[in-house]
Image (cartoon, rainbow over all chains, first blue to last red; front, side):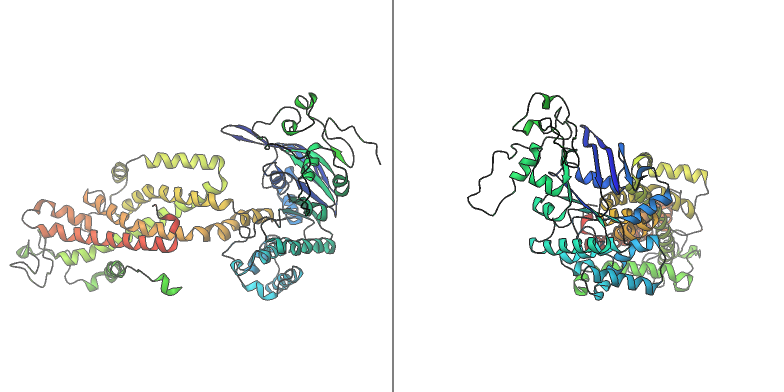
Length: 314
Length: 279
């Protein structure tokens, strides 16, 4: 459904070029959920912004059902904007405080259609019902709701035009732990009901394992490992993925974090290390890791690591 | 909520501004005397509370015997009209330029910002001299000079506000959902800068009135027989030693009006937009 091929985005700053996203190639299957995982600053939000056409890639292509998104004419881009919606992290910042809920939900509809007042009200009531809010919510302002309810409003707004792809940028990170599961279950129900495809950005690995069908681990703007979630979690190949999974806390007081946990800080995308970008933190780094950029190898479970020989296809 | 909003309301300032507006709106009908009526017999008539003063001209008369109170009341009209148009146009142009710069950035922003910097480095009086020479001196020229001087001030402040607003996720969502740029401006940007615009406009009233008075005083603004406070100061300047009231009374009118406008503007700013306290 969505294919990213060689996607690259650099920012020119006073201090040099920030290589935020470098040669990222990923595929989203229709009806699937691809999770982008990585530390903050690794470029996953930049990838989402390029898919949402809030930013343009410096190189590489984004194809939606075969069509190159960056080179669409106005009409095609407008149709694309109808098919691709977003839910952002902070529901306090993503809803205009001066607008009533009805107008917030009506906004995407009115950008594409001209329904009558009655038809519009009916559709607003329908999506409010889908996200579990009463019809009376339509008359209220965002500040009259809790964080979880606000995120439901943001989901209703994204759902109003029945899009096909939804980009979820850390959709529950800003919410209380107690209501995260509710919102995730709602997103899952909506996906099942409408056959939506999701791209979710997350850093909570437990959430990813539970929620996504596929996962891509991003390190400093590059894909370190990608594949079906179950396979990646069962047998991580890239030392960075192994370190991430080893760092997941377990509810066991005797559990000792393993040695695989990555030491040190994420390097700067302003001055990424040569070779494999993970090599300064990698416990198993060899000479080749410091000189040559590893290619992403293997299907469907791929890793970009010199130390992993391509596994036999299963 | 309502009670809190009205706490600390500067009633005195509002009263003065209301009186100025009433004088401007009232026109000839409410003037005690014809402001251009010459009466050389009562030239330099002192104010009523001094020896030789008369209650029919409570603030005295000028060198040509014209009633100072009537002239101040009539002159308020120019001040109000100039303030209205100057603020409307400088605010409108400045806000639009600021919104475009802040939202689109890039080359448009760079070009407009250079223009603003050039504009702000031209002395307003020099600009007025050139314009008065090129155009007819008068009310329109005064408004044009003030608009050219002040639009950049609005543009800079609104640009900063828009740059902060632009990053909000609800604007990102509107773009993602395919909402057109004019609709984003009207629905998300304009309502959010409205308070700022009101505050800036109110704070500008005093400056504009003072500016008009300065231009008219220098002979670059309002011309005889029209009446303006600045022109009254200019007329009375050479008689300051023998008829101090002829120059002091319009001076007090300017001072009271500007002071009231500033006090009211400060109060409104604190009420509507605490972030602007530095202005």
